[in-house]
Length: 115
Length: 115
Image (cartoon, rainbow over all chains, first blue to last red; front, side):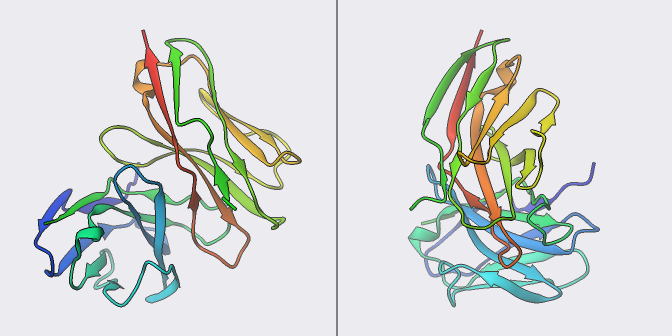
């Protein structure tokens, strides 16, 4: 069964450093998403991406964040200058379409720890 | 106001028994989707079941069923014949209408299945 994959599974970085989190969505899916989950809290939407453009972003997704689809398979989230409060689990998700009926399938997550 | 409310932070159930995890939602949209995800201790988010706002029948997927009461705006997850492997966090989520991509998550319910 096709699945979303994410690398790395765990990333440790120093405050102020740049990190890139990588995702490979399900191959026939057109919509891609990033969510984050701070430890012990609920999952929060960051951004959605379609046709090489940001479709929607939350207030969390400020100028330090960016997303890119550098090739036909990868989807990346870049955090330019990490802060302690960026420590969280970051989930990539993808869906076939954009309807409310379309399930977003999540990857296993990347745990980001900022020291 | 919270869009998704899960009032049970933790639930216990004995193996082979059924358990209901509560979820209420708040939306003024006529078209929306409701989803349940499971998050085991390993951290990944696993899609379980979906219910569309226009679906007249309650959704079922194997041992999972969704008790959808539209007038009460509730979408409770029922797990029948609980197994030890069902121990996990369970999140209810909603996607509204056609002009937003994001899933809105509840705070989750931690289910523990004991022998």
